[in-house]
Amino acid sequence: MTVIVNLNHSESVRLDRAQLERLYVQLGPARADKEVNQTLEDLAIGLANVQKAQRGGQMDQVRECVRNLIAIANKIGMTSLGRVGRDVLDLSQGTDLAGYHATLARLGRIGERSLIAVWDIQDVTL
Image 1 (cartoon, rainbow, N blue to C red):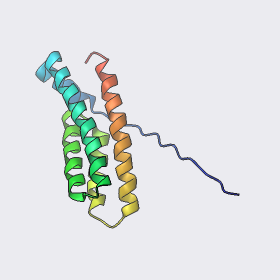
Image 2: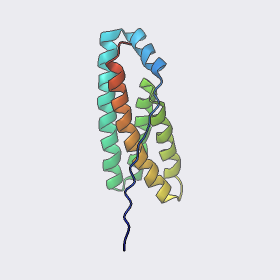
Image 3: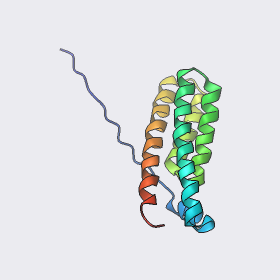
Image 4: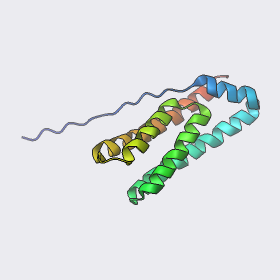
């Protein structure tokens, strides 16, 4: 008899709300909303680009896309995404392929959860 176990990953994310608040104070609500929305769009595109580069076996492109994601994460206070992105970069230089692929998958999950978390925060007055 074969037993199949399905592992469900639940990722929690950390956001630096103060970073987002600084952006709103610095730019004003209307410009900050526009900036955050553009950043979230860039993040979604960046996550797709990482996956595309990985499927194509383009490791240098994966690294470049992950560096861009880290910059986006830092811009609006996505601390979990930035940390996992740095982990992906570290592992991409080594020989632990299983760890690299697991962390890359985690980057996708954290990225998606970060998008949702920032959308949720935007619904609250900053």
